Amino acid sequence: MLIVGNGGREHALAWKIAQSPRVSSLFCAPGNAGVEQVARCVTIAVDDVAALKAFVIEKGIDLTVVGPEGPLALGIVDEFRRAKLRIFGPTRGAALIESSKIFSKDLMARHRIPTASGRSFDTLKPALEYLERQPLPIVVKADGLAQGKGVVVATTREDASRAVSDMLEKLAFGQAGRRVVIEEFLDGEELTVMAFTDGNTVVPMAAAQDHKRVGDGDTGPNTGGMGAYAPAPIATPSLLATITRDILHPVVEALARLGSPFHGVLYAGLMIVRGRPYVLEFNARFGDPETQVVLPLLKTDLVDIMEAVVEHRLDQLEVTWHERAAVCVVLTSAGYPGSYATGLPIGGLPEGFESGDVMIFHAGTKRQGRNVVTAGGRVLGVTGIGPHLEVARERAYNAARKISFQGCHLRSDIANRALASVIGQPSVSGNGGRRG
Image 1 (cartoon, helix red, strand yellow):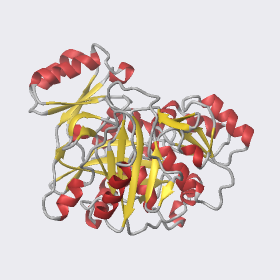
Image 2: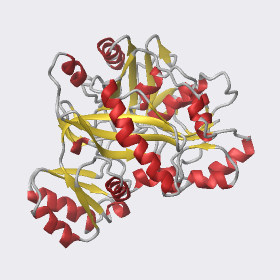
Image 3: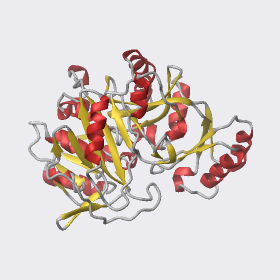
């Protein structure tokens, strides 16, 4: 098997896939210092589709798994399928559900999938005129993939106008911001529900909640994710049934009718407003860092699930879960999500990958001689497992605080909102928290 990607999500995927007795050889392109503990890393960029295809043919890879959204948007699945190579992930057409927010919003509107109301624009004047008539706060989103920075929550008219101008006129996000979506701000609690689907059958995973702002109390700029936990207490069986019936199944059916059936992992980023779910965004792959808390709870062989998806027989497989909880705390470089230094030695890493009920998932790391050094903004994800969230959280933080590198930053309140909700004090956030 081959995994495409180099982050914490891909390390979690490699760790889980390597557990399968059916896997005799596992590669990752390009991987990182953690992935190399469970897979052979090869220096091929995630967006070099031709080189990835050639490697798969050369090595006789049976199944390729795509981690990040970039290769999906480039059409890696389409290219592999044309060459009769098996690959887990959606086609370029189905991946539009993530790579174009306007496509996603239009699809939801046509099929009455609950989402924040809004409109899309590709020129400045009509967008500014629309802003003047909308209540505050207001959310401005770049249409395309913007590396986690394409969402602005504006609390003033000036901020909203500046965000639209930056995207449409100054091209602050390049081609991703040539079109924008302006939508209402939703108050509620965020929830992530990922699901396996073969284009027909939909199997939801354990619901998670991630933390996208860089600072405690959901303050500061958006990031790719500062931590996550699962299962999220807000995701009651009744709510999950509603999400599956009113959101997951309709979007899978809608894409199939468009001629782009979705195969892989469908990620629904939701806002729960007074008990009702609304879609903030869809992603076309495993989330990061949600994968780092969901996969440790998966009991069924992940390779069996992926093959069932690729072979369109997911309805024949029972997917089961451990009755435990997981909390992931992300350690980041100083300055992230802005500019940051790399190449800093990391101390306190355990000799092995796992230590009891704690797993260290590498994200932005590389090996430099005998040392592991930082190589990205999000450096490590420390996941604790326990019988319930409180124990899992304690294990994650105990392990995270033993790791050090210059400027290391982490949030101290991961999973606090879940623990507060258990005692009747739910926290509130808004759809500006989505990373875009």
